Length: 237
Image (tube, rainbow, N blue to C red; front, side):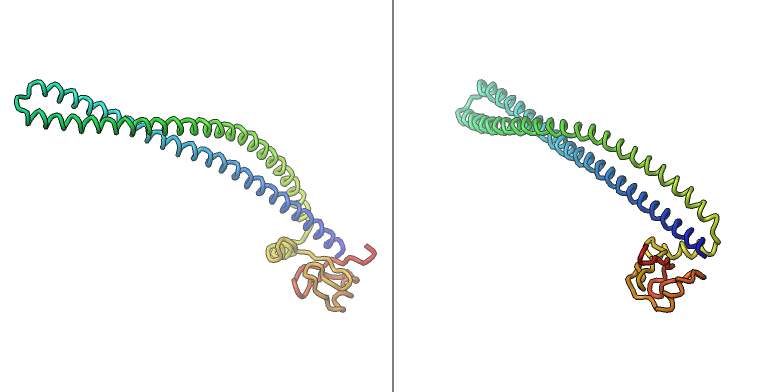
């Protein structure tokens, strides 16, 4: 029975090592996800600014086209005025030209405003692109480092899995099954130390007879409260 308990202790030790290593891997994967997310966010910022800049440039082109058309209309109207015979028609065309020139002035003001917006946005976009490229470069290095760490941890996990399989081979299948079930039910801890009359797994007081039977080392005993397999640890130990 002592041999079985020792093997169970070793099995729990290696299982907890594997759990710890896998948790470390999960943390590294989460960090990599965070790094990738930062890259995505930076790229989204660049895309939003680029989209806005494209929209502004399109609006500027429309204003320029409207401006050119208005100037052409004014020039045509001024040419037509030379052929007008009546004063009434002359005044009407004159009013049209005045209105068109006012419209041209307004368009020119809008163009100046749009050009200013484009220049400001282009500067912001250039800054964001620079930061994005820097993030991408740094992220690639950081991800490579995380991948190296994950690979190293996986090597350790593989070694512990080999060790676990070696331990399991020397144990009865029924005991392995019980151990595995307890691990699943008790957050990865199938064994619990019994010390000073208490189960250290759940901190509950053990029945005196049960605790005394642990000294005999004749059978596997479990805590009546948490059902973990008990391992006796004397006070002097």
